[in-house]
Each structure stands twice: as structure tokens, then as C-alpha cells.
Length: 431
Image (cartoon, rainbow, N blue to C red; front, side, top):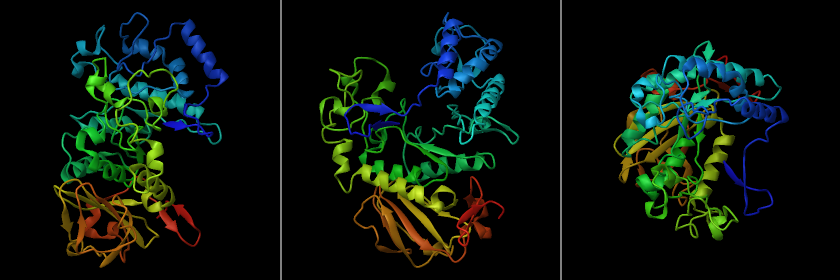
């Protein structure tokens, strides 16, 4: 995450923890012993000789390397650490012989064990995520959570929303269902719509989908992961503006803070990649002053998620989907109210939630909306209208929670079951 410093200076600060003296010693020792390094841009182990070591060689380097990572460093490609041959370029390999090898999970368990040792400090927990998406088999992706009594990653990063070739209510629903249905019981999901090697939402689908996509990941259960710039709707830079040929560069242009030189990202003469041409009108400073900006909505969604147990811990119940819409409800035992999200990823349409006979009330109030103008208004649940790219969070009462209804048991999912006691104002899991 990139943030402006507390004094409001144009220079940026990065939220990396200061490496401790112990970590510096580890790094120094690694340099002295020529430890094979895990590089975040190279999806396999590279040694000083630029050859990929075997699994046994890699394991010998693990104790030191893992401690390096536990100090706050990281890697974003684990799926191809084990190679059966000596190679010089990842593209030289047939990936079915070099990815997801048997030893990979042994490797990750050893990482987890080392990180757990550092998590014993009071108030400290070392989180571990893996970049191990496999579009051909989500079951293989889910293996990176570990087994019931043998933990690996806290979660593998979920890139499935970023790899959609088209956007619709159906494709969105399929991604949500696939992850939640295949995720091991008791594990924690995550959702992302952008990344350093992914074309930005605005450039993939259009500006009209920025707000509704942010509303999606911030109202689903689990952890929403936001790549910098998605909160203001940044676009990928033009290929004509880049002197290098790597397609993955187009989403790595400087964060657009303001309309000053280099978009406020740097006070240098130039940046590695150019700023987008629209930075003077599309930036944090401008959107901070606009009551209906993408940034304002993102902040309001984040605040709602932070303060509502329905969103941070509640059940997810799938209500309806078609080519245009995805509709789902978040609810929690102990609360008699719920949020129902009506998200439009297609054409202007109207949905009748009353006819589904699920116990919805006749009326609901709009808690948040991507259009801003209708917030607080009352809507008829028999005629909920949305335009292309519009999202609504409807707040309403429920006489009987959906996940208690027999007909919806297969359509209601929860990551970590909990109940709320209004008398004690606590969450508990023995319910």
C-alpha cells in the first residue's frame, strides 16, 4: 500500500516495516554465504549462477530464507519453485512439469512452521499468502490452504476476478461460488480486482464498473485486496508511452496523488514509467473534494465494512443472478437485520425479490449506492431497479434468517461461523 506521509508532503511512504537488527544480520549472512534468493519478479528459484536448484537444494536454504521473509520481506510467486531441469528462462519450460510439484507443499509447511515461531510474540502474527492460482484446477489452488491439521498459507491469493475475459452477473457469480464452495471449511477467502501484472478495471471493462467492482470486494466475506489506484479508478498507461516491451508495465504507472509534476508521486526529474495523461483531473486530491467520487465511495464502503459485523463476519447467501445482476445477502445470527447487495454488471434492469418467497420485507432502505443520489431512500423490494454498473446496499429486517431456511442451505456459506449477543455485545462461536 502506498500512502502520503502524515505531514501531507508530496513524497510517498511505503508501509514496509523497518527491518530489525536481527533481520539485517540475516540479510548480511545471506550475502556472505551467497544464499539463493527468491526474487519477486522471477517465478522460480534463481541462484547466483542463474540456474534453478533442485528441491533438495532449495530446502537446505529454507531456514535462513524463511527468516528473511518473516522479517517483513516477501515473494509473490510460489507455484513454480521446483524445477526438474536446469533452465535459464521460465519461458524455456513446459509448465506442467515445473509447477505444483509434490515438494511444494512440504516447502510451504516449513515456511509456516518458521513463521509460527515468530508469531509467538504477544500481539504478533506473521501472515503468509501465496500466489498460486491455477485456472485449470481450483482444487489445486485450494491445496495451498493446507490440510485440516497442517496449515500452509493463510490464503492463496484469489486472482479469478482479475482473469475474467468478460464481465456479467453470471461470470461474477461463478467466481464467487467456485471459491466459496471449494474453500476448505473454516478457512478465510480473499478477493482482488487488480494487481501489478493485471490490466486495470477501467481499461478492461470501462469506467462505469469501477465503483460496483469495489462494492463487490468490500461486501463479500473475507479479505478485500486493493491494488493501488483502483480506489480512484486509475487507467493503464498507453503502450505508446512505454519504451519497454513488457505488457505487465501498463498497470505500474505512478500513483496519481495530485496535479503537480509526476502526479505528486516523486520530486525527481522523471519516473521509471510515465504518469498517465489524465493525472491532472484523476487524482487523490481532486477526488477528495468531490462528494461523488470513486475515492469517497471506497472510503465509505471501507468504513461500513469496518463497523458492521454483518460484512466482516456474517453469512453470505446467494439470492439471484443472471446476465445482468448478482444479488446476495449478508446476515449474522443474533441480528434481525441484514444487508442485501444488488450489483449490476450488465444492462439496466429490474428485479423482484418479493417473488422469491424468501421472507424479504416489502420495503428496504438504501444504505449505500454507487450513484450517491438515492442514498437513504426507500425501495420497493418487488421492483429494485439498477442501471449498468450500479450497485445498491439495501438494509432491511429479516423475520427468519436465510441460512436457517431449508431451501437455502446450499446457497448460504460462511467463512468463520460466529453469533452475536446483543446483551453482552460480544461475538461467540459456540452457536
